[in-house]
Length: 554
Image 1 (cartoon, rainbow, N blue to C red):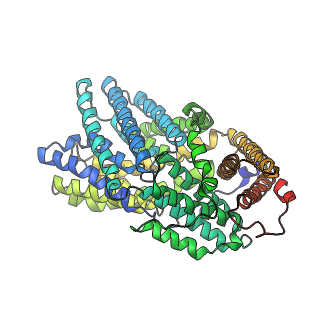
Image 2 (tube, rainbow, N blue to C red; image 1 turned 90 degrees about the horizontal axis):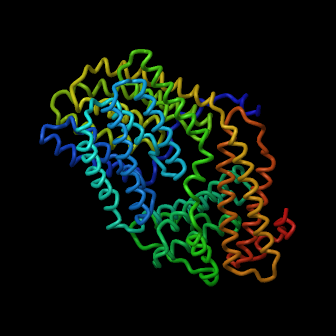
Image 3 (cartoon, rainbow, N blue to C red; image 1 turned 30 degrees about the horizontal axis):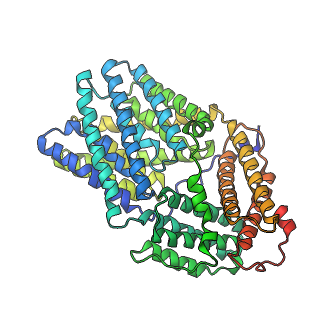
């Protein structure tokens, strides 16, 4: 048993509000633009009972806002297909059986599959939760087999509209996502440069900067190999961020922040002169584009414990809800599904946030219920406003967004028929508490002993990448393309090591972690990265005369 089992579950800071996302308004406006036309059309036709199916497709507009538009087009297609596929499976199950135990079991298995695929593909927020909400709620929608094709077609049509909404901003700002990713990398590099590489918190700032730079490179790579002057300028700015990571004491943080501000504006991308021939600086881009992507099955394998937690936790939460006599066990199921994060500690934090947000959300629903009961139009408008509020607030803290998500989910049940508000509130509170308690208990009971194994593999990969880079540095004239590719591989390995170590540190019931080895591997890896940048001529060779070849090898 590791020392992690004796740690206290955190409460301080769990509800603390952070800064809003740079693009909080994009998903917020997109989801309103996606939901409004279908819902207003159904309102005009007097068929708001069909709104749940169009909502399934409309909510796809929440996804992929951080992706370049070439990649976003592909990702949104898969999101729509995944959403509609989950809906179709749920409606089919609902039409074939009314056995609640069977339906909860199906919902739990679908939720586990959605969780695993979303994590393996790094789909990003809102992840699997929206998919699971739609598929689980649909399991308990009265349905006949003949109605399924029409309802699925409605969702697919709304999903096609959501795809158009998601892609529309690209007509005005085609490089917006890449610019934002590069700006984030520059800001993170400026924060690290501000520590001069030695001040308090420099290690965490360095890891954050490395992760942001890596994410920005991945954003540029996802845009494809099409030659583009703007993209070339962004690549050169990222090289400057990498220079700051290698030589924080010789970097001006104010200049990096100024470039970041310009990128977030609407003007031209700042142009910086390369410190040497740009072909030598950016060879790694072409090299990475040529690398094949890891097969999905290989990315899914390490997620088996998390998928098992999700399946067992969701099933038990649904069964417990049924045992208490609540008529909507899918609320407990979705609550459990929303909890599961990379480790037990993060799952606990999400559980606290979920419970607090849901309890405040039912109070907001109680306040809105008299207004929405006046006219169906008020119901539709309130749902759109809550969708906007959820996306505007959830970036500051999950619980704050859930304050809007909860009444929205309750109001969606009103589309089919008017229901007693008091009963809805009582059942939602009960299912929230049941789902959170049972879901967290499952997270504790279903151990993830693979976390330690993943950390060992990440350590080995980082050490090998550092050794390969150091070997190239020892050569008198290494090939520029080979050295650049090795540097990029080492940077990616160090980012993965830090993420894996953070995830493993919050996991319970596992062997002691090699924390000292992690620190030494990160330290030597970043030294080697700095030496590689100096060797490529991006910064002066003598900026740190105390650093020797032995430092690189250590």
